[in-house]
Image (cartoon, rainbow, N blue to C red; front, side):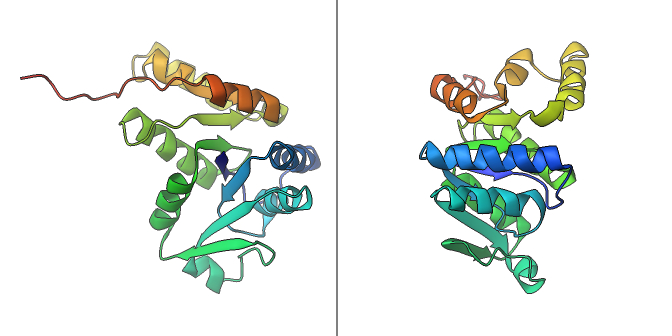
Length: 189
C-alpha cells in the first residue's frame, strides 16, 4: 500500500514536527509507502526524512519550477519531476491508494479537497483521511459539519472522510473503507 501525504512546507510547532515524524516512521514500519510533494522544506521534509530513516519507501513528485527554486529533497530514492502543479496532483493520485492530510496550510487543504472531491465525482474510490495532530483539524471539521447542517454537503460524504490520530487507526480505516456511491450518476433513460 502507498499513501499520498499532503502537509505543509512550513515546520509548524515542535509538537507537530515530532508527531509528523512519528507518523511517517510508523507508516514505514508498517510497510506503507509514501508519495508526497518531493520537497525538503517544512513538514514535507520531516515526513520524507523520518520515513527514510525508518527504512520506508518514499516517492517525491515535484514540478520543475520548484526544482529550479532548489526545493527538491536531495535524498529521495525516487523523485519524479513534472511540468506543473496539476500534473503533480494527478501523478500523486495515480501512485497512491489513499490520501492523508497532516497539518499544513492552503496547499494542504487544496490537495486534500481536490482528492476528496474527485472521489465524490467517481474519479477514484480511494479514502481520504485527516491526521488530527493536536486537534489541528477540529475547526475544519466543525465547518464541514456546518456544511452538512446547511444542506451543502451530504452526511455520507463527511462520514467517508477519515479522522485518525495514529498509523494503526489509519490502516484500520483504510481496510474497512467503503466508498460511497458517486455524487452525480447518469439518469437512466
